[in-house]
Image (tube, rainbow over all chains, first blue to last red; front, side):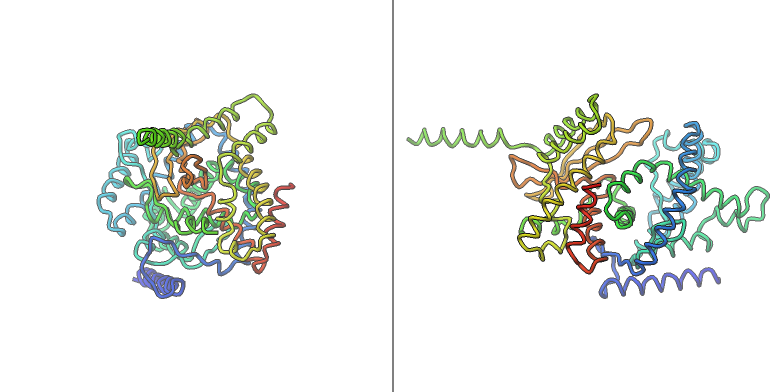
Amino acid sequence: MKKFSIILISIFFMSLNAYAGSDGELKMEKQPKKVKDCFENLNRATFAFNQGLDKAIIKPLAEGYRNLPDPIQKGTHNFVTNLSSLVTIPNNVLQGDIKLAIINTARLAVNSTVGILGTIDVANKMGFPKYEKEDYGQTLATWGVGPGCYVVLPVLGPSTLRDTTGSFMNVLGGDPYYNASVHGNNEFLNESVYMATKAVEGIDFRSNNIESFDNLEINSIDFYASVKSLYLQDRENKISNIRKGNIEIFYKNEEDWEEIDQN
Amino acid sequence: MKKIFLVILFLNFNFLHVFSVEPDIFVQSTVNRASEILTKNISQEDKIVKLKEIAKETVDIQGVGFYSLGAARKNLNKEQKTQYFKLFEDYFLKSFSSRLSEYTNPEIDVLSKKVLSENYTIVNSVLRGTSERPEVKIDWRIYTKNKDNPLIRDLIIEGLSLARTQKEEFASILNSNDGDINSLFKSLEKFSKN
């Protein structure tokens, strides 16, 4: 009950935030609102700290991970992706997408059993639709909660107040894997295993983006602003689910493009 | 006389039709040209020089520059505009060619196109996956105001717009410096000289 109250209070405050940032309009619009960087100085300092951490620890680990044999990397990637279904499925339900929740449940069942704890993506080979992760931040957005301010979290990186609240939902009962690890009272899982899994997930992500990040850093005149822009664009796309279905293109801000010809 | 007029009209129409370039064909041809350079056994510097030549011909650098400035473009005087375009072109060509030159043998397949307006068509393509990288979706925003000479105005890689990222980067520099355009000029200059 206490957890439920915390979640409700969080959503309430996020809604207020959406209200403050959207000139009185609570509903989601196709035209995304500009996300304010309310804590820019702090964010830049945290970003610099994260970059230092990345160069000293995370990137070398990601490079080492990349030297592992391909089947191990692929198996690890499949394993952490399969685990993420445990958060995706309740979010499919909360977003009203029951059909997708059923498909993802079947995918989880097949991959966790036939696919040996998710290390082999059997469902993909069987022709299941492409898997798209969903999280509580995306669900809050589909419920009309605005992003709030942009924040950079230590170690975890770019986020918004809404997405950070969404992440808290995982440890407030929204992630069955966390519940089983921390409160499950079993001999296989504990908090350390949960943290290790999350660390591996991060290293896996970083190893898939080594060149892209290097390239972006070299070719940016303000790397902080580039990362912020790309993060926010990516979140907008995920919230709109533009990769789903047949609508492959979803172009916004057309007036910006049309306007430049009038100069 | 009427016949002559009709013949001239017909020829003119055909002439226009022949020189009108379809955006998807334009993208495929541009990609093929870039791919040819990237697979050539020449130095990285030579590749960059040749990629810059292609970019000058196929990208609307001035249009992208205007877009990247956002609302700040309205406050520039004539001199500042001239200075900006010079700095922006150097910055853009360096950044564009440096990003591209990292790829070796990129194979891009043009899949479809969608007309957004009289001025814009989006061309959808995919960069074929290899053992080292997954398949990447790339959309091209093609400026079609001049049908005979379509130009690239944006690349949208897996849903992430390069022009928008650049625009937000410029806005961030301006915001951090009380909107002083000279701060942006300095950043662009510094980037091009490094």
